[in-house]
Image 1 (cartoon, rainbow, N blue to C red):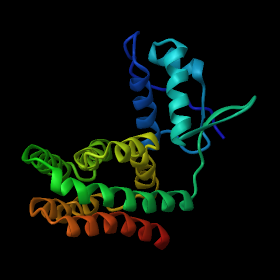
Image 2: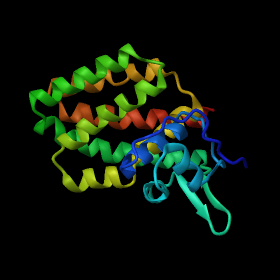
Image 3: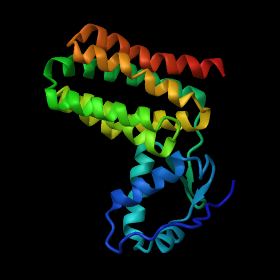
Image 4: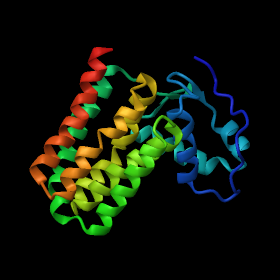
Amino acid sequence: MKTIEFENSVPLKKRVLRDEVKNYLLEVILTGKYRPGDRLVETQIAKELGVSQAPVREAIRDLEQMGILETEPYKGTYVRKFSVRDLKNVYDVRAELEGLAIRTAVKEMGEEEIAALEEVTEQMLACAGDLKKQIPLDIAFHEIIVKASRNGILEKIWYSVSIPYWTYLGTYYYRYDMAHLVKRHLPILEAIRKRDAGKAEELMRLHFLELKDMLEEK
């Protein structure tokens, strides 16, 4: 295990919200700068970001609840080590949860939401392979669909367990063909345009189950 060194970090505003700290930590973890087993030092993070320890402590607590970090008594907080089985489980859950979401969303979605999906897809195609840009757009694509389901309970579950971030840990660490991953959104978008709920659900489920199969092939 190595202790994380926050080199070349960009200071945040003094009164930063915990979500800003959380998003920063997520970014450095998702980009692979800090790997499973790396230790996070609360006082060091606060100093490097120019904030008090309170928002850092809260952000770390949030990431623990998400399953990204874990704390061992008297030892500290570390980026959680996860297994291929963990990632497979996430793909299974996303297939079911987002399959349900899109089935309803196709019927409920307005033209503005479809236009937003089209715009996000175009941006993903334009930056395919640039993980720092592509992953937030990918999350946005699925987020639009989840919100369009008008199912508050489903949306709450989706956010509370931070399913997208767990999945994208796999994206970074197992290095899929990112251009191919972007293009796999196109048939989903087409099914939404045609208001074909059954086809959209089938494609969404397949979207995640195929990723699960890719893990099994490695």
